[in-house]
Length: 211
Image (cartoon, rainbow, N blue to C red; front, side):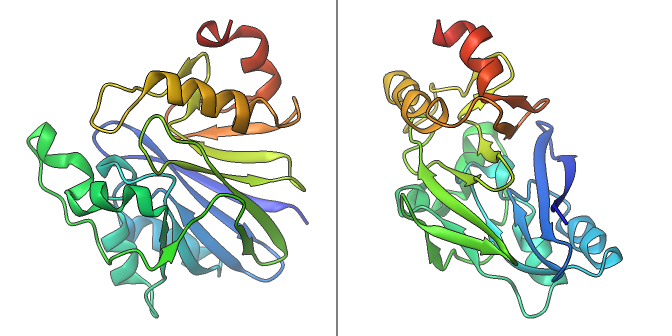
């Protein structure tokens, strides 16, 4: 049995949201609930999966606006995981006011993510890798057994995350990519926050920002 993943494209800027589950135990997590939390919860319920937590790669509004809906639809309400360096951004509605929007960020995160921390989904273990640059507290979730990483807005197919928003740093982002992404095996699947999935090897060879 492999890790089961259901992906959604949600919200005003077409953000990738992921449901990842251990099909054997039925335990699941939501990664970056962009919008439509009830839809995400319903999809898990259809598969008889239990949402045990919400993991945020970072605190931009387009990656967390669905958390409130998931929290309302799932009982008990699942805890939310975020790196503490992004808590100030979370407290500012994920930057939504910069774009003329208002969101409810949902329940306050209670799991404080740290570099090297181990998280589990059923029998599957994930390593938290701190990868700042897009935001100060950005992390990726890497599952070595499945050769995949949920990498948020650090790197995309042929591109990298933007660094022009408050807390962004181009040089810091490039350093994060070289130390936290390109150190993974070439066959590692990269499930990004926007766009199609890619692999470490493909980005190493062809990403114009890295050559």
